Image (tube, rainbow, N blue to C red):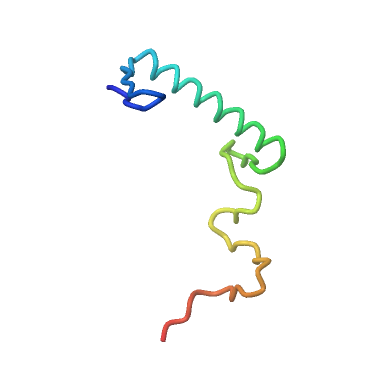
Length: 80
């Protein structure tokens, strides 16, 4: 696989397995860091079975919390 780009002049670089493995490892570290931060500030919590869940998400498909938007009707859209 090749990557073609322009940096002052046209360039072409082969994307080796080692390079792609390094990119994958870097992205995984970044994801883990962001997830750890989200967990630390309370954006993400864990359920009893250790699955990630959003705090405001309804449990087991139950009703969602009311919207803070006064224009929201709360029901399905009307059909004429």
